[in-house]
Image (tube, rainbow, N blue to C red; front, side, top):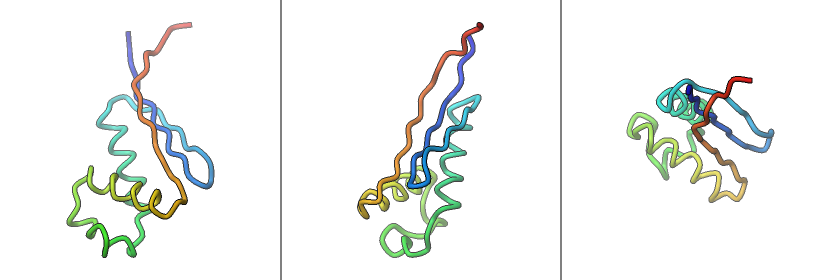
Length: 84
């Protein structure tokens, strides 16, 4: 059975849902989102994007939003593709 990865990113504009062929593709999409939305004001607390790994960037981005109480979150899960 084929499987896909579903990524949901929720922010104050509502949820963004994307489907990916692998975990790596989904993580790259999540990283790109965090990278594109990164605010330079976060550099002082978390370090610059050049200093952070992909995982550190993702963790720092969502930590910053949660600390500000302006919640953003993501869910990533693997699902079977079923023939209908």
